[in-house]
Length: 555
Image (cartoon, rainbow, N blue to C red; front, top):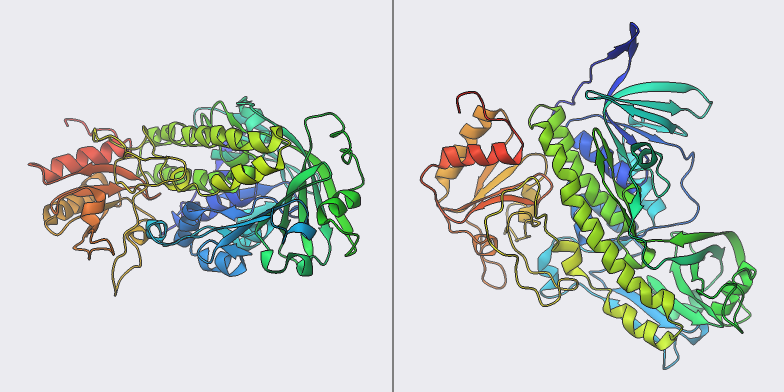
């Protein structure tokens, strides 16, 4: 695929470099967006004000949907190999008063395991890898000429045709770039969000926290109860312990009590970090070395808009959730997945600019739902001093397949078919596969000799899936692609039944002569349950509507 080549703009007769997409921020969201854009044939420029990754490992859980995106980018195997834990093998979560009491009768060890019906939902599974490890892997895949480190966005202006970004380099050099589009992936204190005037809203329960990075030989204490997260509550100190990629290096996040200064009889909020760690270790040994610490405030908030003209927000720039949600990194990567194909389609003349107007109404409701769930889940950890309640309530919310895989887009780049969403007992924990327009297209095994999953057919262009009697749809797709000058690939699939005896057409709710249009981000755009009288006319109308293409004169 040939990369998009930008044109130069001029100001006062002087050529000013023109960038198709400026990505501000090189965390997982920005790097994912850049890699996806490059895959779609658009070369972005990424700028990152930091000169080095944070020493504090932050987000770490990558859920099933995010791992599906990493599969599409070809980095899933590398991420899985570097992971500290994988759900397929069982991710352990421990609850105890102290590490020394991990084997006491009132301690609890629970495992989140993908097996049975849950394993049939996807060829991918949740893994745990701290954010610095994710960034390292993604940066290696990004060509060096597409990223500038130590470069900050200091001003942003836009008109109908372009965005002008003012950048300040590590040596203080100031440069003005003309860009077609700008995406702010620059975190909680986003300069891009501030420039657009967007405001974070939602509030809800907030918690003051103290994050501590330390070294200690804790392996013998943990033994067989080593976990991806160990929740601890002792001597007025509540929080969670997590391993890092380095042996004997750990993070402990203390959730500070709502009572100013700390609970009576407990360690005060400003107690030395070593005393805090020692309290939750529960014994005077082993030696503890504090490497870094700092306060921070957790919030669950969403921007009042994620798009302003030619400027978009993604990741923490668009929404904040607490670490309890395990959703921050995942939300950002999935924002990038939604936006990248749309930007590329518009820039390459394969879609109308109206396609970009679907980003906010698709992604913001997802963020708002996750923020609401996060506030509800976070309330127990913040508000209650009852350790027994904490250890009982938190494990209930660790399985969230419905939240991860089941949230649909109700309006946007899709054509509803009038069917209701599936009836789900608990839409937070349970996922019911469906190809209803707006939903993630379900996984189905492909059988020997081909791709592992139906999901592997999606990626760089819209895909039309049709059953064994769908030859007319395939022919119509070829003609529509030529007529509209857009890439559109059709697959006529027989498909073997899965372990439950379902074929892919059963799962997708169509007859062998029906069809389903799937977007490059793996979401269903349209569905025809069976054959129609006019395959060509129907499909052309559908593609035009989904891609915001104007009807040609006389039609």
